[in-house]
Image (cartoon, rainbow, N blue to C red; front, side, top):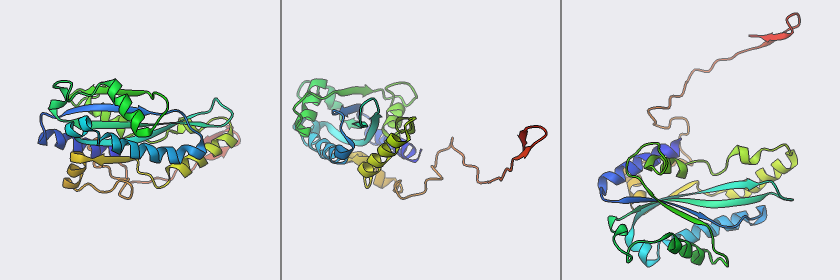
Length: 236
């Protein structure tokens, strides 16, 4: 909630400062990996995305970006395998859509990712233009922000009916994600984050999200339920 709220503020300010800017939602994937390799793979992905933004077409059109990494678990194998992929919300100059000298096709984005990651196979890369209206519809700016700011992992991917395997998955994820940041900013979006003086979510207040539609009840109540042997049921 905190990440999503801060990102929404940053995007709103970015639109004010650069009214002609356009947003893209980029999803970068690689093949599944084991728990032992997950940490090094995630680090390599972080370095690779930085390389992409240095490539000529991307560098001259990019205003700023925010990226996050998501990890899902494949339990349908002998040992848990991890599908790690990166969500990147790009803020581009309006010139991005004016001619082949600026526009980067999906095939080009795929080639960039393959080159930056030094992959021997063609990875799956998806890129979509984000609609400027801030609403909850698919491909909207708000929907893209929420997708970028969501959890790195989901409990439904971890918890199964196999306690031993569940513990292995938790251990793998703890080792791989330790010390990593859930979300990172670059370019104009990073500058705006500093301008707004937003606190560090990793170490800041996780109770008050500054969201108008989220209220936290500060009153704690203790409820005691006792067993009634005659009624064969609990009562409060």
